[in-house]
Image (cartoon, rainbow, N blue to C red; front, side, top):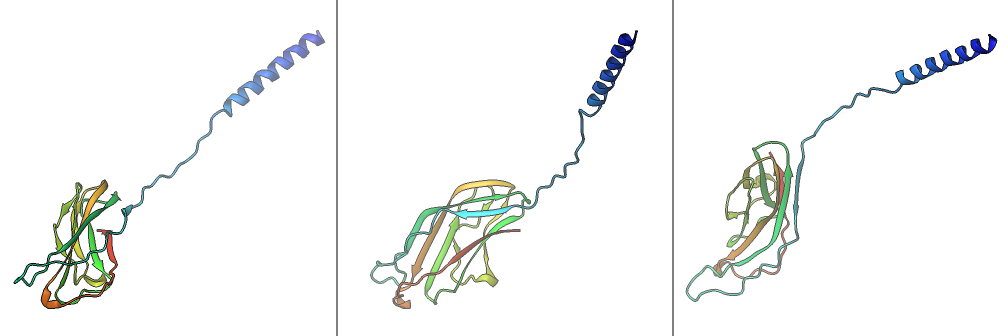
Length: 166
């Protein structure tokens, strides 16, 4: 009889442990999720040197030098009012013009835009109304032109800053 009571006691205790373990088999966690505003722009490389070395007799405008060897890519999740602006670290002297053209499948390109006098306080819009998402491998074209009456220009560099902004 003691043996039967002992077996029944062990069985009841085992059932209680199994039920207790099963009651502990689930747990809850609260997970907080958010997506912040993402603005990313990258360029493939620097363009080649733009050197003017030709013109037409009797015409003040010299033959422009162009480069379309670079591309840019963007990612943004903010809205359809995002744009790319451009400016240089210093203006060009009178008689010299640098234009920039950026293609886009997500927005509206302004086409060939003069950035010769654009500085950080006067950046110009290059691509506007950019839709949410990503745009990769889009073309960048520079054109440098000069008038013969402006004279020669020693090799100089300018840093062009492209900004993805709203």
